[in-house]
Length: 434
Image (cartoon, rainbow, N blue to C red; front, top):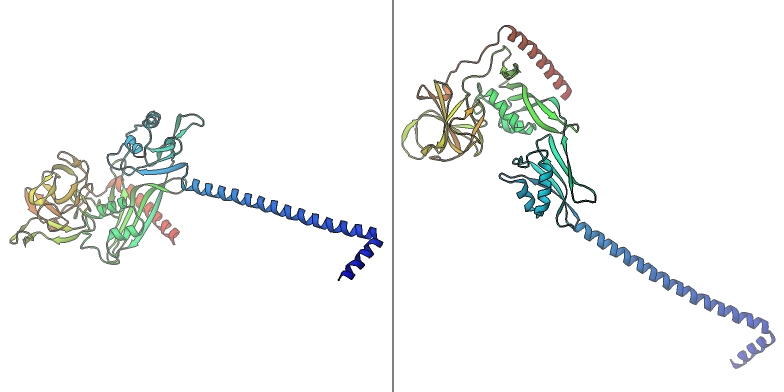
């Protein structure tokens, strides 16, 4: 070993230049390796720094999303609420509310809110609950947009009017359980269903005359915006209730405020009283002697009972004047209507009266006067309905009333033209659906 080292030094001594170069190369390699390791360490630190900054930003982003600066609120107005009381619920400062009220009051009555209207507004959570924007509804087609001016703590507003286009639509369906359920399944608005039942209520008992697989057709007006969203419904133009294959078409015809419904022969379907003042009910107890379900003994039942779910609307069976709307003892909440010098009607066991129903109030045929309940001496929700003729209670289901007027002369000619146009419209709408 020593001999080998001694030989190496001997060679290096003889080759001094070669030795110097070798040592220089070795030193250079060593320096380069140290430099590379230093660079790698700095790069690793830089990458860690970047990753930490990214993580911090990510966490901040998530936190900001969990606690957004701006909150959008859609409040459904309840009965008795005011504009001020609604904003107070969301902790809006009184000074902010006063500014908005003053702005809106220039264009409409600030207390014009109605039940179930939608009040929309945005709040800046970071600035003492300040309102950024607000939508105040005036009607289904008119609203006021309120916004805060950029850079200053003041508001400006503008009235927005949605232009509506009238359109006629056809809805038809097969009755499986009840008219109401089948019509609802066909996406017909409830007010149209009630009006359809009112039109046919002069001739049809919806509990006894309707059979499974009977059918209906309705053409009625809708009012759409530019996005084809329906805002309102209008009149029923045509109705057809098909009972056991027999068609019963009715046409909307008239002028100014004297419109009515007529059959194909120009005969008005309207009579003095409707056959049944409630839709979708079951005849649970007829006129005549019966064992009273609560008193337990036989007595004369001088009315007709219709079983229906609590809250079902009850209609006035004819035009007239409300002479009573009060508690009637065993009859619970009841309404009495005088129609003319001959006929009056009574509606008992109501859960509540409709808005505005009180003595002296004029009502129209088909107008909702109350809702089914079980008040007074009652074993379950139902309507007790009485018809009084010249002071004597009679069987409403056997009442024979004269039909409405028959169109004559020019009115009949104009009706025939209108009827043909509706029949053509019906054919066109059916063809489009198919």
